[in-house]
Length: 402
Image 1: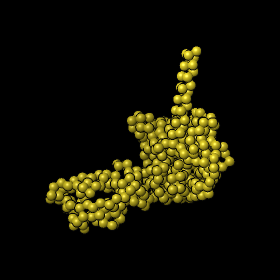
Image 2: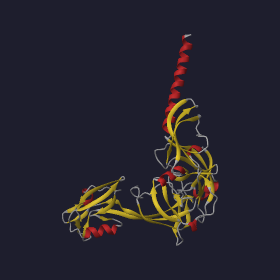
Image 3: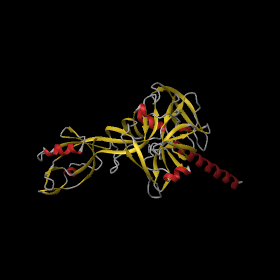
Image 4: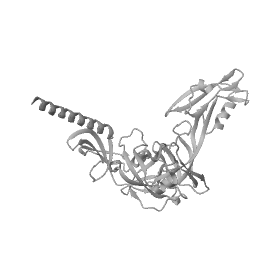
């Protein structure tokens, strides 16, 4: 009898421990905020059934409408056991034209990114004034002596008339501005005043369009921010433009090495005007002449996404967007890294033969499942180029809304 009671108690304790673990797991993995199309049941693709119970209603602005119904709800395991409180924004059905087209970006930075520092050979010895002034690699120089910095030449011109007197430098680090004082020194090797830092004022590259929002005349692309190639610094955009591109070839990916689409800029008109760089991609206004003649597809919200078959549109031949099969292997509804919401795998033998899987230049390729645009390709796994990450399309739209 005692053995039976002990066995029952052990089984009960194990079950309670497992249940507690499951509740904690879903509480962390499930985000606090969701979007749901008006009039549709709220369902999530989870291993164990989760239901929601509405508690109160309010209105809140979303990327689709400035006066949408918002409700507080309780997320429950098996529809009975409380997991956490969430907020659900009811929104109308949104339609987007899928992209997949490759385009060129010519970017002028709003300021100048510090890419490195070094000593200046002066009469007093080797010295780095920028380092003494607390400048760090990755900082963005905004102004010097009150004058806006648009190019490296601007810095040279200001320092050339400083006569070695301290200059006030306004810079940005991790999104916050600070001011410091730096005293230039005369370089015996270049015969000019310097502060011992190298900067980048512009950059260029290629990316893929994710969607065209014809209702608001905007396009979204890349799925991740444009960052400095040397420092990883998020680049604030100054004047930017798009350009046509011509694919010259493909460098296939292999274990330990990411592949790339090799392309060059052309004189053709670009897809539109770039408006901003966000944590979830680059966006801008559409050049109507460039808009491809494709059927619009509804936006798929993250709650509708499930593991299994999907496809992408990307351009690897003559900049013509083609459809390729993929598999969604994992979904992270509450990822701390905004551009890594899904793990995807290329399964289409044609694309694997051409590229080895995901390659540089494919970032932004739209991910489509159940005839809905649900996301965009963002990263490749260097160890296995057939796999990579994708971002939720709704997250891209939220960033544009900001």
